[in-house]
Length: 293
Image: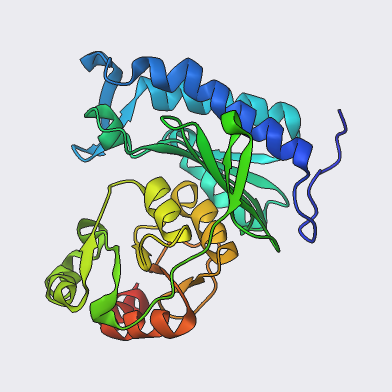
């Protein structure tokens, strides 16, 4: 095993490295996540910041396994796991300066998982100085994964069937033709009335309480846009890269580039620049909050 950093920002991760990482996520799912699904004891579920922000024994066990595996493969990498950051917030502060960092959301959609809903996944990204360069979103139930690397295309891999297919975003369109994800209760409290008033502009808007599946649906063209608020790198870095590699227009609502070190503002992914601008204009009132923050 080499001690050198294995993934220059100008080159994609190798096939062997990608396979090793995917196998690590599959093992974590098989060992820590799926055996507990719909079998959690109440003692295995607890609140972090409130009733809507849960953590389970599966989150903690899966993250520990994935983090150990990544650290063995990449000894010099910074590992930024959601549950580790909950205990040691200073870890997150290092991501913008890290030459290579991995973010881990071991069970994205924990509320769904804890309540027996199968809409959850594992999200992993690799970043260089906060720039996402590799992203993987794994569905433990279906045992398939969406993956992308900087400069490449977004793909769906079905390991058991040994199939790979490219994915791409929708064609976009006018506001009343669009479907997408808007996390209403994650928007700034003082702007929720305006967010609610904007919802009828669209053909349909909803939320899955799961960034993993929202990004996957967007990247494969099933919906036309998605918002991400209360930015956390383990939720959004992989999806932002996959969305861009699938052909989407990805930027903060103020037009700036997304970076995994970003903490404030709202991320908007849309099918193309024209669609992105239409949605941005409809939600321009959110920029006032971002500017004041």
